[in-house]
Amino acid sequence: MKILILGIGNVLFGDEGIGAFLAQYLKKNYEFISKEHSVDVIDGGTLAQRLIPIIVEYDKVIVMDCVDVEGANVGDVYFFDYENIPGYITWQGSVHEVEMLQTLQMIDMVGDRPPTKIVGVIPYVIGENSTFSITKEMKKASSIMVKIVLDELAKDGIKAVQKANYTLEEAIDTVCFEGVK
Image 1: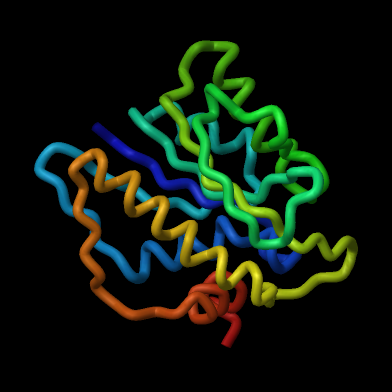
Image 2: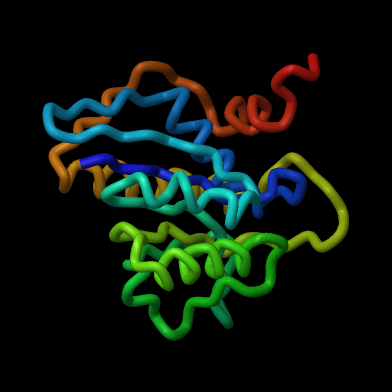
């Protein structure tokens, strides 16, 4: 089975880039070992529909992204099957989420979407100002999100072996500033 861990997010808007930041964090820190399965980690940024040809090549997808839940707090983490999105979860209120929802719906229309899990988190939405930093709530939530992803992979018999010790801040710097220095 081919498994895709897909980080979604707009890195120009702090917390909203968490999926992209965590994709880099996972790539830098872990090697995924299985005799039967392969795992790819991709920073999908805000590419949305351009990701369709990539997504349909996999047998299972785990999406890391921001979600919106009325009355929730910044940093609250949710884990659910795309097929059974809880009614209280939306992908509205941010720069990129609606496009990812529409992307998955478009794949559904042609029947090519692999089983999809969502690891979603409530971001601090900053509006029009740009920042490459994330809130302390998001830093705490990121460790929960990573644990959820690694636990999900373990259910499929995939061992995550730590190969480095990059911090989340180093992953953010890599995503935002690689090639700039």
